[in-house]
Image 1 (cartoon, rainbow, N blue to C red):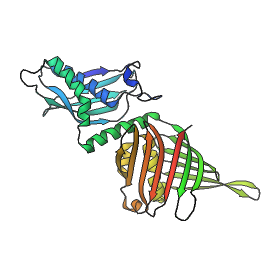
Image 2 (image 1 turned 45 degrees about the vertical axis):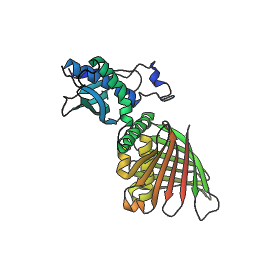
Image 3 (image 1 turned 90 degrees about the vertical axis):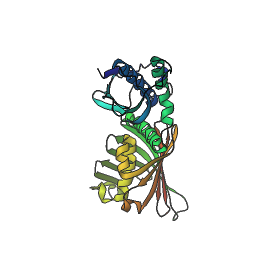
Image 4 (image 1 turned 180 degrees about the vertical axis):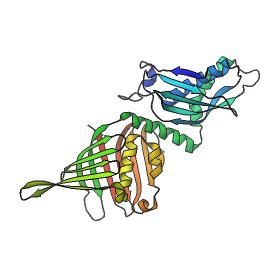
Length: 307
């Protein structure tokens, strides 16, 4: 039998501070659980090998308190053991452990297995920088994805060499996974920009002779490359879609959680001709600010706060 059940009770102290109001099983703790089960299974198969390190891991979806998960191991091969954790048929995490034979005369096998589980966390810290960063980003984006639909206030300031003071606007943002983003500007002029998939609708309130009128425009998102880049930066980040974001931007994590910063650089040459960089900053699973830097030196700052 290579299938097991996993569940972390809501009362477990591992949820303290991870995260307030949005508890999820920490990735490192989930790996330690999987490692323990792996060594139990290897022992039941008559193997003397132990899972003693992480060769690769990918977190796709967060695991919640009291959520029942299915853990499946593949047959060991080439000193490695693949695993997959899923809930309701959806993969939450997958990866590969390194298998090693214990040295003669070492500690008992049960003790070695326990030590291996405890060593999984520091093993992650010893991953090469690129893989360690990818691990941190996957954990971070899994937290974003768990938040689902949300609404926030925003304050946008546009800084330009042509103006002495920044141009400021205020309003609300609505995000509905996976690809609906609505921006309602309340000041200085009412305007609604709604992006659904590749369709953009803009409604602008104007003062006419018979009172306030609304002008509506519709166009495809890809007809305005710079808007498409900014929309993707916002939507993919809010949706926790790291893979989608990496199709459009080179994504790095200069500052890891809890107080984190993402750096997004456009991959498309035409977009990079106008948009130089996007910085996204926040704390835990809270996204607090987007900063967009144009090639010409202008900068737009978007601060958001949950409603």
